[in-house]
View 1 (cartoon, rainbow, N blue to C red):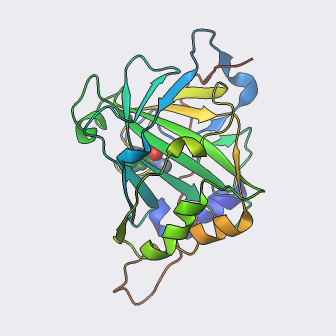
View 2 (cartoon, rainbow, N blue to C red):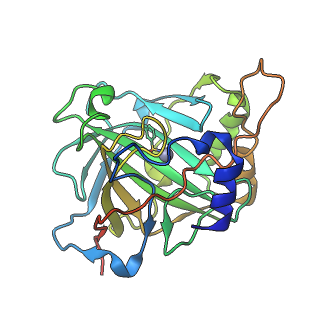
Length: 262
Ligand SMILES: NS(=O)(=O)c1cccc(F)c1
Ligand SMILES: [Zn+2]
């Protein structure tokens, strides 16, 4: 495990929690060992179909910031890829480090990225609420996208501009007409996929992970605004910067990571 990640785990109370659900053998995140992934020609292209009008609010939940979507209808969905059913977008959020040297949850051949985007969807063919789906083994599908520091991401800026209004834990503001498709890389056909878990409590093993091979680029300054958020609420005396909000890599426990590309 990357020494920085180990350092963060030791130093950060939030992540000294359970390293895995007791008996959990499909925990996330993991290190994706490229040469051990297995090409599966049955894997289809992803079909994300998002309606920006379903975007509702952005809030600081004390772990990350979440952009939440109206998931009472199938207006914003994900199909295809490794999925047999239709999955409804409910929220997206990020994980990042205090420095650009680390911050992602998944790694590729041990390579850490400065941040990682998670687009969270639940199986609306089988369940009627996210809260139900989160407990079932094929309940959720999460797309992971790595962020690298480079050119400014124009689509991200609207979100970055909203962050100072939700600096503290539990603050929420209206946030509308944001198309999360703008955060996907140009190539969404190349991905790795495996069965895993949520990376924060309740850590339930209900996730089909779809990790994009191609990253997106954001500017140094855009990522710096992520780090201006706070874990703490306005009332707390000691304010803590929201950084290193990632879980360390978990053991694969014999799982196979499939790839949609050779
Ligand atoms: N970080 S994550 O595994 O995408 C996640 C954690 C908790 C809840 C959720 F909907 C998604
Ligand atoms: Zn996440």
